[in-house]
Image 1 (cartoon, rainbow, N blue to C red):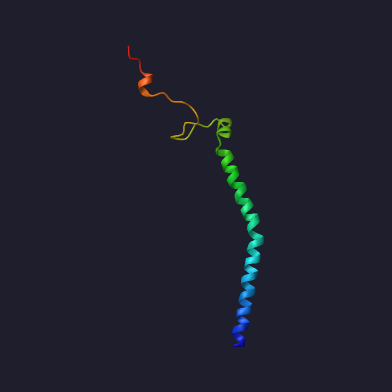
Image 2 (cartoon, one colour):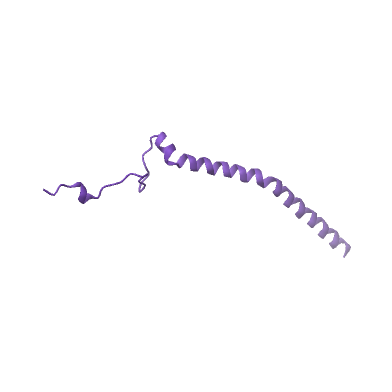
Length: 76
């Protein structure tokens, strides 16, 4: 039994060390992903796309009003 207790204690220390490592590692990783996400969102914004003179992607109006076909044709 004493050998099993020693292994349990070492396992507990290993788990605690792993959690401690992850706790100090997670904030920088989360910050990196947050920065990347924000850069993507800024790049996709209407303002940046207008500055880069990109055409809107398929199905995206970007605030422009389209006329219906029936309004575009003259009925004289």
